Length: 322
Image 1 (cartoon, rainbow, N blue to C red):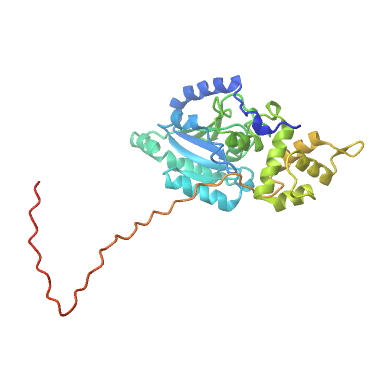
Image 2 (tube, rainbow, N blue to C red):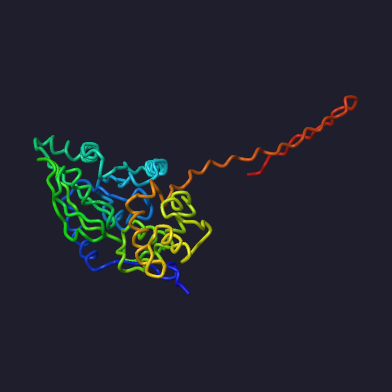
């Protein structure tokens, strides 16, 4: 009998995150703009609810990063959703995106502060803090904007452990910060979404169960891509059998023809995270509700009197007492 991944709550809040949060708060007074990165495949799950309260008094820009891995229509819908809420946001591909587009948006956010200092005859240096959950691509983003590899990067969460200032131009500096989660992941659907994209350390979870859950989700939302990529013959298979189908389809076998589910789990997760199943979004923006139409008022039917009948005299209405 296999224990399902959803039976065990997913949570990850190592000690370095608590320390990083304290350092972030200490640095806030030095920055003019906060740029928050989330994963375009899971915008809702990859936004730390604690950050909103921490940086509420700063100019902010939300960037849906890794947009090249997400469905384009879904990303547009998320951007429209956030803009309707008054959130300044944009999408970005850290691998191929243009640094000048981001710099222009940052300069727009900081324009008021720059203008105030210019009125005093001072050329202001704009300082920007980059925040977000682990493995959302903050360091890669910083390097892209900078044009060279200064910030340390990696394909696993927790690579950045300390704040790091990077000078982009003589008057623009970025502060790359460690990825921050929140102490308790209450919504386990969002927690699994974070795990699928590699935000949570794989070592604290059962990889086989995580891969099974991901495969089941892919079979629901993009069956054609999953069947083709993993050469799945039984498209109705679920649970451990579905993972074994993927292993047999791709030839991940041990001696005796036994499915190598350890290897299979790792590759399934890695290939999804690398976008090898195509552009996929696991979360979609809330549908815009249409305004409810008011029901037409029921009018009393007019009683037509016979033509040969004299109209009945009506008594004058009594005044209404107030």
